[in-house]
Amino acid sequence: MALPVRQQVHYWSVITPFLVGGAIAYFLDPVADRLEKMGLSRALATGLIFVVLILVVVLMFLIIVPLLIQQTNELIAAAPGIFENLRSFLETQFPGIIDENSPVRQSLASLGETIQSRGAELVQTVLTSAAGVVNVIVFLVVAPVVAFYMLLDWDRMIANIDNLLPRDHAPVIRDLAHQIDRTLASFVRGQGTVCLILGTFYAVALMIVGLQFGLVVGLIAGLLTFIPYVGALVGGGLAIGLALFQFWGEWWMIVIVFAIFQAGQLVEGNVLTPKLVGSSVGLHPVWLIFALSAFGAVFGFVGLLVAVPVAAVIGVLVRYVIGQYKTGLLYRGLGEPEDDAE
Image 1: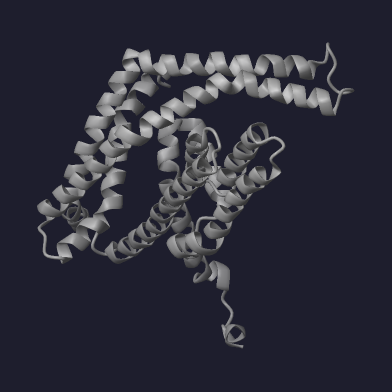
Image 2: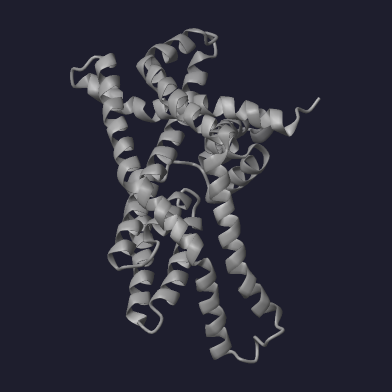
């Protein structure tokens, strides 16, 4: 019997901190291992990592988050004016398209007010919802605690799991687990670093050239870079659209904004992705987009968290099955393999 939607949401809100905590421990385990090789104990290495992590998070909340909230509120408040400028531009350049009773004109006139009212309503609901505040507090407390203890005992947990493997199949399972770990490490850690670098670059560069809401645009572009091509399209389109209204008539400024995203894509495609992600990931962009879309649609935010790991696991298992199939009689047949040697 299917669970009610409200009950499903409650279960996911309970599970999410543990999934996030486990993911944080998995990503930070190589750092702890490297600190151990430098002579620190596992407990001291874990404590040092979390002290640095807490300092970074506190710094972000003190500096970046207030500025991000301010620019988001300003963007919502400026939406009516932006669409009014668009309507005036279209009336001037294309007077035959937009008349007094045109649906396009009516849509542009109401779209800005709709974004402003709905955006403010959404922000207000998120900030004032008691359940939402409680869930955020629980998440911020439980996830780091889970991550700390899992990181502290990570090697011991892996050893215990290895001891439970069936002895006859342990080598194959270890090999598959190693391939899955390599795929996840290559993609998630590498692509996450790419997202962080590009998001920082876009935000800083757009703010330096004076684009309003540059921090918001850079954050959006950086986060969406996790999905191939989407970050550049959405972030670039949003930045250029805002630049058209802010720098109308100053074409060199619009070209500079366009050049910032072109430079980011050039560096990503030729330096960041080859160096940080590599070619051995084994996750095709189409397969990744499908996994994110499917799991996000079915499981929401939790689905987005588990989409890439599940896709990586399925990809490794499918490649293993194909390899077994190609070495079997069903594929090779009963004939002599002389043709293979030629």
